[in-house]
Length: 180
Image 1 (cartoon, rainbow, N blue to C red):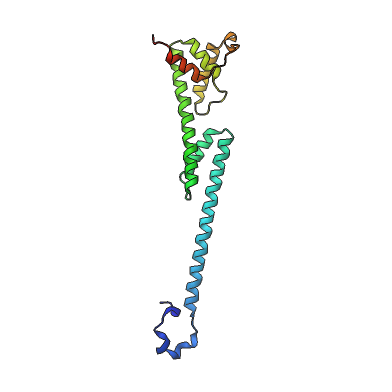
Image 2 (cartoon, helix red, strand yellow):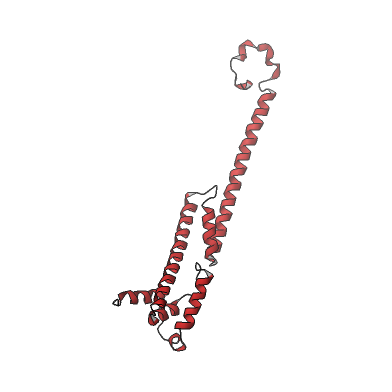
């Protein structure tokens, strides 16, 4: 037991008061407790700093339109040792947005495959005209297919069309059309 906490020795061992109220073992014990406390504090602040740095890198990639890197970064951020509620919510929100973009791109590509196989030229032209310049989640082979479709379905007359339709408009118009 720690000597300065031992209350029974006050009256019985009046002769042993030469050591003082705190013995060497007590001092070593207190130093160990202080070092462990400081170590835990330094470790926890370092873990928090690493988590915030990782999260800042994820946000920077997201804002720089590097969505593949941002998606990987947010997936890694879920495994960090320190995530408070607000960081967890932001990770969830950004991951959800990235997943929605990925699903939309893959769905659009599968519809484009279907329309090109069905030779729906008008719909393909509208989709290809409204297609963004950069698609993030498609493979290089899929991007090559899109380039091929552009050369096949887009003619100089169709690219000079004054109406700019989005891929969503073309899909909506096709779904509203009667099925053959």
